[in-house]
Length: 341
Image (cartoon, rainbow, N blue to C red):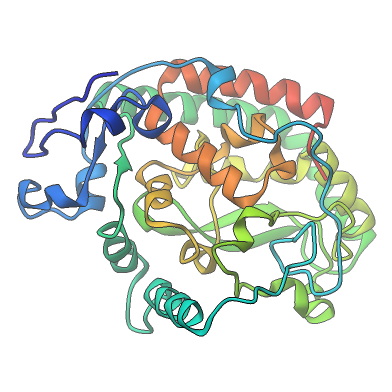
C-alpha cells in the first residue's frame, strides 16, 4: 500500500518501505514523531485522537501470529507474577554494560511520581519510530457509538435476570461484594472505573501477594500471560464464570457510560502501561473494548506481547465492518469456550 498524506498539518507517513506494510500501518496510515514540527502545537497523542480515514482487511490475516499452533494454557509456577509466566524466567548472564543500559531504559519507562498518565504517554510516544493511526472519521465515530449504545442497552436488558442470579450465586459462594471494581485505562490514557463480576477471593491480594508483582522486563512480556489456568485466587463459582465469560457482563455498564466500546483493545491497568513499548501505546489511540481482535484470536492463550500486537493491528484497521465481524466471531468463541479460563 502506498504511503498516504494527511491534512490538518500532519505530513506524509514514513518511507515507502515501512508505510507499505499492512501490519504496520493498516489503511489509516502512520505518523512519525520526527514529524512533530508539522503537528501545529499538538502532541502526538492529541494528533492521533483527531478525525479521519477508512478501510477494511481480512480477519484471518489480522489474527495470524507466529507460533500460533499448539498453545497450552499457562499454569502457576513458583515465583509467577500477576502476569502469569508459562515457563520459568531465565537468569540472563549479560555483561555489566548491558545491565546498565537496561537500567537506563527501565528508568526512562517508569512513570515519574509527579507525572500524570497522559503526560507519561506523551513522553513515551516521542520515542516511537512509527505509530499507527486509527479510523478517525466522524462517520465512524458516530456509527461506533450508536452501535455501542444500542447494543449495550439491548444486551444489558436481556442479561439483567441472569445478572441478578449470578450476583446471588457469588454472594452465596464466598464472602465479599458481587461486583469487582478496578481502575483501568482507555482512549487517550484516560482512566475509568471498570466493572465486572468478582471471580476471586476478596482478600486474594493478601493471600497471594506474589501474583501481583508488576516488575516486568521487556523480555518478560514475550513469554507472559494475563491469566493462569489454575489460578489459586479464583473461587469455585469464579472459575465457572471465567470459563463461560459471564463475569464480563457488567462491562456493559461501562459501554453505556462511554468508558468502553463493544469492540476495542482490552483495557489495561495503569501499572502495566509503563511496560508497553512506545509503538504499542497506539492501543490508547482508540477506546478500549469488551472484546477485540485478540479475544477472537486466542484470548488467554496469547502472551502479553501477542495481545498487544493484535491490538495495534486493530487500531490500524478498525472499521464498522471489522467491528461487526469481531462481534460475530466473539459469539462463536464464547460458545466454544476457546481460550477461556
